[in-house]
Image 1 (cartoon, rainbow, N blue to C red):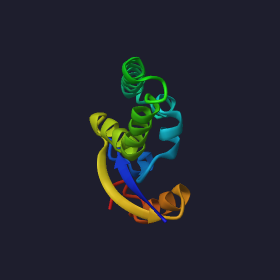
Image 2: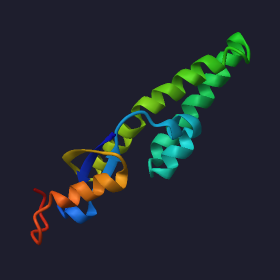
Image 3: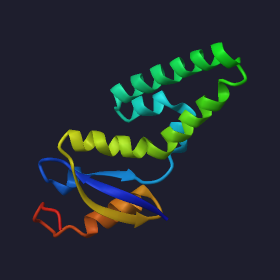
Image 4: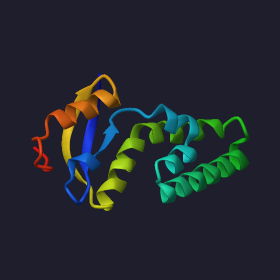
Length: 126
């Protein structure tokens, strides 16, 4: 089971809600800036790429190439723990608001649960 937060757009239409999975983002760890680009987090992707490059260059110059892996791994773990929060923050900056938390086996099941909670025909969140 996984937790999903429901983010409703400024229009308030439940059909346009976005579900954001909670928890560790393995794909963000593995692909880093590419994951952020896929999620539409352009500034975060550029910032992460610059940070990873700068840290790698600095640590490699001071301690050698083997030591550069340690901070790179640390940054990747930090990204994995916070990537979904960054996505939610971006949605908030675009005017989306938190509406609900759903627990489900999959994103599809969470979406079905979200629509089952909506009053029929009203178009407003419950």
